[in-house]
Length: 231
Image (cartoon, rainbow, N blue to C red):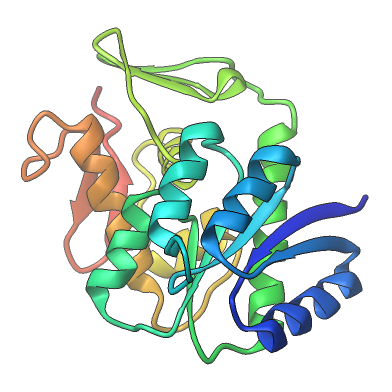
């Protein structure tokens, strides 16, 4: 199966190098060299994944990501940046990026991230053994990719949904950050545990009445996290 990818990157050498290596995993890729052009391509075509640079002319990557998320909440977005501050990472993740790579990055690592996102998509499209998971006022419907809390829809990014579903499918099971990277993101890479923390914090802000005193996603100090089985 051939996947179609959109690369939005203003450096032609990087964009074309990535495009070339994606062919090795049977992916076709279009390239846009500025944010506005990338957003136009996205709106006029169907893509399975977007590789998006943060620093772009005309329209920056944060704004592009925000706009494309209005049209499609599920397509995976891997954000590239030459910035390495925690603030930049959090901003990218907050607006809906699924993964984050800081330049300079290795091509094999980027390809591994792309393959991990496709494994996640394949898992999502596989038949679900349960059509609904209910924990008090929290209801998760995997087949509809929908979460409600006290009857109101909760807007989650694709990765937030995957993380919540993974926890809720194994209530009481404690996971450390490395295990969550392996099982939800599809890879484990030293130094990226902050990605797990950021996603859990944002998920808690959306489903917990008081994120400082969570009722669903619990911290097991010194170990990791678990979904509260006492619901």
